[in-house]
Length: 99
Image (cartoon, rainbow, N blue to C red; front, side, top):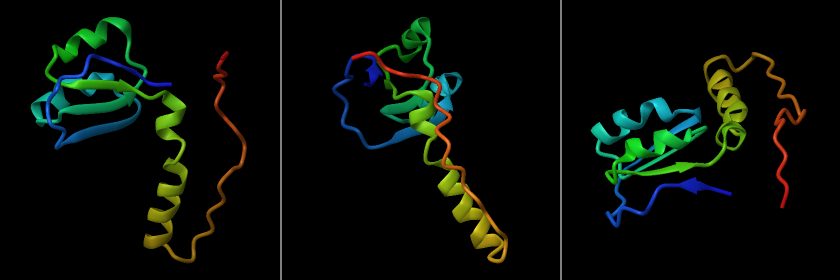
């Protein structure tokens, strides 16, 4: 389930992404020329910050961060190939959805 602002009808050439709670970067994404900003935890009144200049998409906090452990593992092992990295298989998302 995605929450978003109205579609701007702009051709999408640049997308800004911030995993987790990134709504504080909305104005930065606009200044960078992004047509879309994908993040999480956007509060109701923060949607107005888009001012029809950018499409804001709230994809969920956990959902936008869930792949970062693999990314960190790849970066660490590239820099330190003999370093032992263990990724937990524990589901840490406290949010459940009622459908």
